Length: 179
Image (cartoon, rainbow, N blue to C red; front, side, top):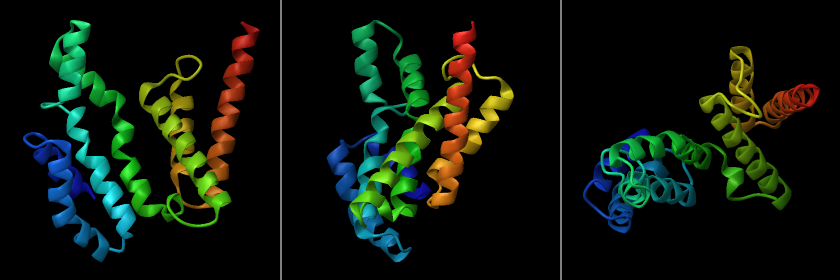
């Protein structure tokens, strides 16, 4: 999956998204299928990573366009876009290792999607160091553990992650009301 990500980044420097996807679908989808990734997940991984050159420096065409509109420096805007898009690099791993995102009973698919969404929110909170207020180091570590739990494809870990993340939310909410 990491090689697909790197290949898509290199291809994205010179090819549009569609051409990058087609090229990688021909080369990487069979390899991912042989590694045990479902064909739908393999194509979703390739499709997802084919778009990452739009927000990843040095190309980051979307960031260059945004910089022109905002009147900011293109590379600084590209780095800010890359920083905000870190979750982009986690989602394909969810496609590969969490087959319930694509198939299974509707209730399990919805639970998995909700857990993944909360996990990405927790990941953002961890990387940015801010939730309802700036996080203390111990809170950041706890949210990191919650992130792993919420993204792990096992219900017990998801419940643990939800418990930690929900507890931190309630703690910060109560603390905010006291002030």
